[in-house]
Structure formats: structure tokens, C-alpha cells
Length: 473
Image 1 (cartoon, one colour):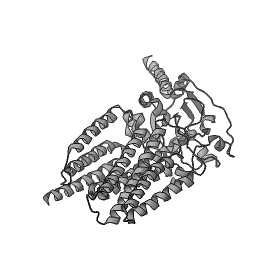
Image 2: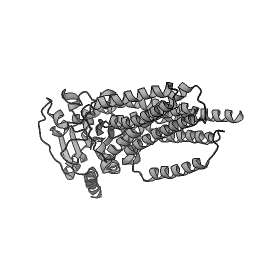
Image 3: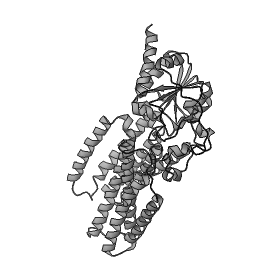
Image 4: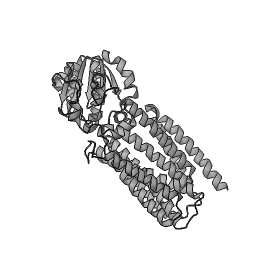
């Protein structure tokens, strides 16, 4: 009895630490401390769980802890910050797989007569939900990982009857789940178990296939939510209170973040999941939208320096191109040079810039850019007409004026950072092609925009060198 009180009391403490840590993650200045507090809560939960009387053999637990520690340290030590989106996708997938294994293990314990479920229907139902959600999360996350790591194309993959196939698979999992829950025949129960397990793994893959790389922030947050829901269901399967609480926190926070991401793009979750956005950029460009007029006007690093040297208000708008070129440290160095030259520098962050929620914040924090210089979209837009220069680093859709001007554009109505309202725009881009979503950016053809072509890191280093030369004279 004393052990049970200790375990549940420790779970309450761990849950409180989870909530506090999650709240701190909502602010950049406290995010690191919040992550540490949440980690301490999880450590308490793990250690106390190992004291549970149901743990009869620690051999494989110790092996798992050792292997997990090695892999965790390697990931923390060697995975670059620019690879965090695919790393998060992979971790979401492993979370789903872990829940699936817990559900499957509990089923086989019941099937082998090791335990008697009480009540049987409830136990079977939560096992079904654990495996279904865990399977979808696992394979969906693996597919998202492959897209983010560019092992697969970032374009949506569409085929005729795709929605019908997904609907049929979903219906099959529901039917199999009902049979699994209410049937008393061991053979039918096993067949249903095998059917919905296989269908869930296929469904996770096919659900992410039609989602383009430009929508990855929504996908990552949605899969994060699903991994939490799967963990919550697994907590009910093994009657572990802290797993239920932690899963609920991850699941609900992921849902909230998914809604925020959709709102930032002015699109519904259904549109993100099922529209195949970006699959046919040529058709979208020619679909009756505003004809793009103007020409791309290149600028050199030396001329960019001349523009920036005279500027007093500068806003830097980072996008995925900054992550690809790993230019965040050079960006911070340029900001410092501009400040020494008398300019006020801000970093404008769009909610869906990059490939995961908070991607740009993570990269800039890694480069030690001060938190107070990071400005959200709603705060920077009223100030944009007063900006002498807006530096757009590899961003595309989040600064595309078509979102507010072209009703035929797929991104019409999406809130953007109004970079086009700055007096001068310097857009850093590797080439003249369309962005990751496949849409042409009208910003690049405006009279006040100049294109600085090439690798963003190398281009910015050229501008920084000019500032250093000025300081040396």
C-alpha cells in the first residue's frame, strides 16, 4: 500500500512538472528551462514506474535504457539544428511505434491467458485505438521524415481514387475494431487484430502521401498530437496514470498547434490533408490568376552592401533557404554589423516558415540571436512601410503578395509578412525556380525588389566582408 501511494504521489508531481514545463515552452525566453523541467518530470515518472510490483525482470529494461541513452546522446550531439524537422518527425514515429507495441503486447498477454481483461470490451477497445493511432503515426511520420530529409520528393503524390482507397482502409479498420471488441471467438479476434494493425500501417503512409512539403509544419504538429493520443490510449491499456496525463498533454497541445498552423495559412485542416496542395504548380499558375509582369532584377553583394550601409531600419525575414544553407550564424553576424553601423534590426518570423513549427526560432536561437529581436508577423506588418530594407532569406509563400492580391492563387487569403511594403527588398535565392510549394512569388518581380542569387550563406558572407572592409578603413 505504501509503495502504491508513493508511485501515485510521484506521478502527480511528474504531471505538475509536465504542465509547468509545457507552459514555459510557450515563450522563447523560458523554453529551455521548460524543457529541462519537463525532462525532470519524465525522469521521476520513469524511475518510480520501475518500482512498480508488476516489473519482475529488469534485464531488458536496462538494455533498453542503455541503447536509448546512446542513441539519444548521439542525436543531441550530432544531428544539426537544420535537420530538426526530420528529427522531430522521426521521434513522433517512434512514439507511435512504442504505443503500437504496448497495445500488441497486451493483446498477446490476453490471448495467451496471462491476464483476464476487466472489463473485456473496454480493454479491447483501448488496445484497438492504441494500435490504430500508433500505426498511423508511425508510418505517417516515417513518410514525413523521408520527405523532409529529401529521400522522397516533397511534391504531393496523388493517384486516381486516392480518397476512396483511404476511406475504404479506414472503414476496414473500424469494422475490424468492432469485431475485435465484441467477438468472443479467438480466431476472429486474431484476424481482426491482424487486419486493423496492417491497415493502420498502410493508412498512415497513404494519408501523408498527398500532402506537399510546404504543408509540413501542419503535418508535424498533427503527427505530434497523434503520438500523444496513442500514448494516452496506451496508458489506459496498462493502467498507468502518468502515461495517460502525459499523452493528453501532448495530444491537446499538438491539436492547438495544428489549429494555429492552419490559421496562419488561412486553410482548414481538411484542405491541408486532402487538397494535394502544390501537386500541379503549372496548372495553378495558369489557372486564371493575375498575370505576373515585371522582371527579376539581380544585385551583387557589393551593391547590397551599399543599400544596407545607408539603411537605418532593417528587417530580416528567414525561411527554409536559411536552414538549407545553414546561414543562421552569418545572419546574426550581419545583424551585428548593421547595428554597429547605426541600424535597428528586427527578425520577422512567420508561424509556418520552415518545415516545422518554430523552425526559424530554433535556428536563430542556436545562433544566439537575442529573443527581443524576434518579432511575430502581426507585430511587424504595421511597421513594414517604415523599413528601409527587408532581407528575405529563402522564404517564398510567407512573403508572396499573391496571398492578398490574386484571388485565383492557391494561397489567396493566407496571412503573410508584408515584405513588399518595405522601401527596398533584397531577396536571397539559389536560382530562378519556384519555391518548395511550387508557386511563383510575385514579390520577386516588384520594382522595389532586388535578387541576390546564390547560396544564402556565401552571399551574406560577401555582404559581411564589405562591412568589415568598411570598419577597417
